[in-house]
Every structure is written in structure tokens, then in C-alpha cells.
Amino acid sequence: HMYHLAQGLIERGHKVVVMTHAYEGGRKGVRYMTRGLKVYYAPRLAFYFQSTLPTIFGAFRLFRCIVIRERINLVHTHQAFSTLAHECTLHARTMGLKTVFTDHSLFGFADGSSIHTNKCMKFTLADAQQVVCVSHTSKENTVLRSRVPPDRVSVVPNAVD
Image (cartoon, rainbow, N blue to C red; front, side, top):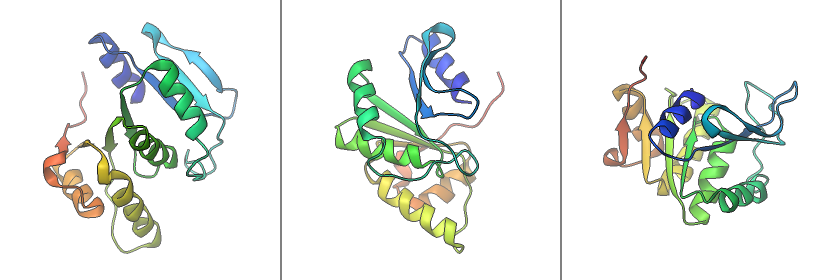
């Protein structure tokens, strides 16, 4: 998903840099993909469904270096359960960068993990310039969960090209 979005943006003339966590089996460091897409694999191992442990400031040093080195002016984070996405959104805000957050999720409001995730989203998305959801149902759910004003949430449906 991220790869295809990045390739589409590169095709339109944008420079795209991806930061994700390291993967077992050797994906670590920096890799160059098709059309000059640069991927940084941060030294954080996933422990459950490709999620990493939250550290709040653990990713800041690397994130800051990447932002400065690559001259990044917009940070697009992805997925409500991604601790790295929440951390990078907060760090981008601290550095004065514009942020966009994409959410694919439909969560409830009653169980422990949903309550925790909803609180994180409310805090993280407070200053996000834009939130993108993949359906109108997802938009309604995200607005309720994160208290983001509906006019800052756009719907861009998943599509097949």
C-alpha cells in the first residue's frame, strides 16, 4: 500500500522518503527502491501484528536526522495502531512540519485497546493538518474517536488502478 502510494507521488514529481521499522530477515538500514524511493528501516523490532513498542522519544533522533537530511516538509503517517506513526506525528508537530494521518480502521469505544487507541488518536491528531480515511463510515468513526473536526477529515476510497 505505502509502496504504491509513494510510486504514484513520485510519478507526479514529488520526492518521497519512507521510514518504517526493521523487519526480521534482514530489512534494516536504508534501501533504495524503484524510481528513487528511499526507505529507512528504523532499528525497532515488531512484537505483535507488525507493531512496535511505544517509546515516545525513541524514534526522535533518527526521525530528526531523516527530516533534516532529506529536507522533508510534510509528514504522512499511517494507521491508528502504529506507535511509530503516532511518535512521528508528534515529532513532526514539534519540528513545525505539516502532518497528514491516514486511518483505515474501524474501532469500537468499549474495550481496553480501543479506549487506549482512541485517547492516543485524540492527542496525536489534535494538530494534524489533515486526516484521510478510506470510507465515509471510517471518517465518521475517526471523527468520533479522535474528536477531529469533520472539515479536517477527507475521504479517499481505496481503489484499484
